[in-house]
Image (cartoon, rainbow, N blue to C red; front, side):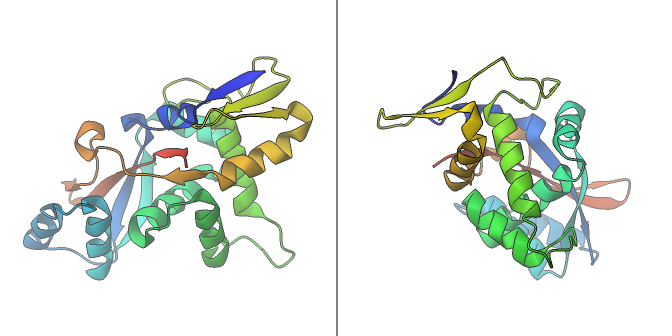
Length: 217
């Protein structure tokens, strides 16, 4: 059995500077004073409030790159469009305050940022987010090359915070992924420790880094 202890393994896996996404700030040119004003926001939810300020000033965020090439390649290995999907999930979290991954999935379905043909009710976003969560829970880490191979596990043991143990056999992978989606959320880690959340200019263009942190509820 593959143990996932105390719902913290996932948080530790996706919770460092390697999971920073760099976004281009487009749509409108911000003045130096506007940039400084946004960067000076120091509220309890300062990163979220900065993103809201960026949008309220007529700008939008567009994924530029994922800072860590190994993490980027790992995501592409899982699904070639996963970087774009996760970047939109990050925006939904910081801009709209949507925390639960299940709610973020619903938001992506409603907005359909990747313009999938959803006329036949294919669950593109839900399926791809579940696949990502499953790979992370089973060992994919941002700083380690992921091959997609597992350690011969026949099942998954999840130890909850209250001590209860949930077991999923390998044949119940769908139930396992359902559980992950329904019991995970996004959080804001330390911006100073992980180096994100400040507008910066590079080669004349404006950018901001945002961090992907996922943990269990």
